[in-house]
Length: 340
Image (cartoon, rainbow, N blue to C red; front, side, top):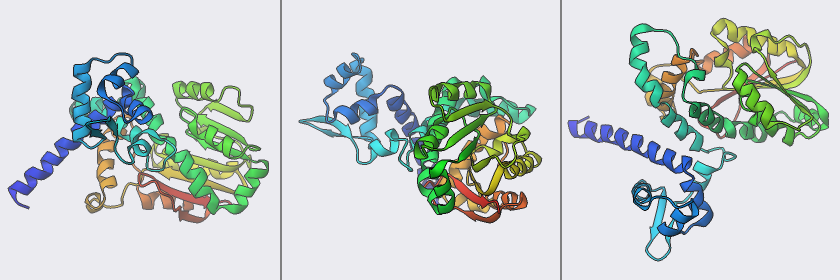
């Protein structure tokens, strides 16, 4: 690689950083949503639609959004969203939704600034002490996963799906703010859904989200203490296993999950797709992105489960027919295991 080629690569990193923040501003202020609803829309009408925005600042954002191909501009009609931007940045039900992920990356500014201190001193920095927007972005980022599990993964388990449609029980480990349990309850209207969440604040948010839903129960609990036996037909874990501790805790949780499943039940565990070798991190953009995510995960005390490690852990817990699920979300590695 020549010096000029390396310069171009570094400059591309700079542009990506700017684009992330421009998108974050557009999402936080409702600008992208307003253009989606009203577009094509002229600048003055957009400013009025959002309560009288400052025209000078609005012009700065619109210019940047046009430069980065987030919006299109027509001299006669004004601004409209670029092709596919509505789905990719505004629709959490779309498997390729990136809005939450881009806002999560913007929220990581705290972690990157704090990292040198922890690099020297060690220790951890709990999520509860971060900017609250980080938790909101995490919730938004994981919303497509529940849709992916319900629409792409569960159909590969037809006998289990039939059981759930008749009225079974689902356990969601690491329920977060409750989006997944709501998704499962709506997908299977005769099924009871239980969500357990270790973080008290998140559990409270989940309870608020499911208020009035009689078939949903939210528990503030530690998956390492799960004691129910043969109580559920399906257990789901979405980017939750690595949050439970280290390798001994991962084994403990999976063993308890196995015991909590009824015969014929299944586990769907979705994790970050960490590759098994250092060399692989240059092979896919998703793997490169995970190295940045790991700054945050390390600061909050979480480990990284590689793809082969996850497959091995699920098999070790006693599950049979352990396999990688075919699904459309590149930022997830989903493993299915069944209980005989």
